[in-house]
Image 1 (cartoon, rainbow, N blue to C red):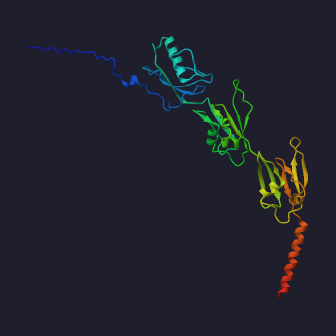
Image 2 (cartoon, rainbow, N blue to C red):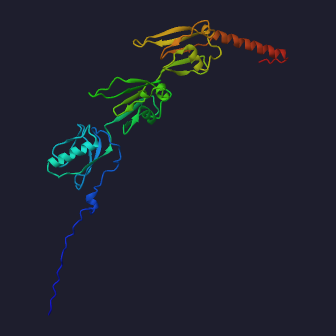
Image 3 (tube, rainbow, N blue to C red):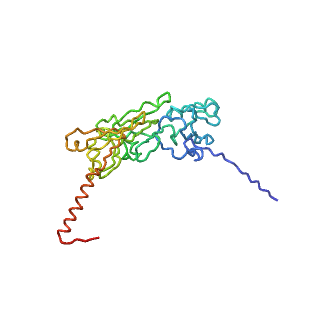
Length: 316
């Protein structure tokens, strides 16, 4: 009886020097949304760490509030705050090498989320918001994100930022008209994060009484509000307006109210200078009851005469 011997020879598979490696080793899966522009890293930023041929180290890591990055298998935290992504790559690679974890590691850092560059737009804007300063951001860009100023806005914009000691600086005042007109390009500040843009509400006065359109009206920063301007904004005097009006004014510190008479008829007839109103003043134009009663009586008499003159008289 013949026996056959089967010999199986295992030939080793050798990768050529330039042969591609398996995808799982060559291209570790990187975190999503890693297309943000490279900027200096700050606390609470989320980064994507990719180490070539080391999937166990490839992950997303958030920078700590102290500005350091804590990576598994690396004993000492790696400083990240203030570094560019390329600089952090060198720091992480150096730490891996010094702790004998990898020889000549290839590290890639990508930015996933920025949280260290907030810009706040508040006050008299259509949509107050806070966003991160990613890429090139200017003051006009920030106001555009807030959908512009609303009807209550004053003509000034206050911009402050955080200094090196962590304190907020004295706001820089910028005239909105000059900013939008482009007459002074330096007013369109470049924002890098930490800025607070505040748009104050404009000062207002109140007009009540015998005017066609009572209400509140804004005082512009580049022009005074006077009695005649207030009447014009109220669409003029109503019939039977009194000759003397009153300005009710409240003191800033004591909140005491004073009442100032205004010779309205003389101002309208240009026999007396116009009077400037202050913020929060109330201009009250009373009703001339004597004139109203007199004209009402005359209308009744004239109406009675026209009725009898026509030959019709109805008795009640």
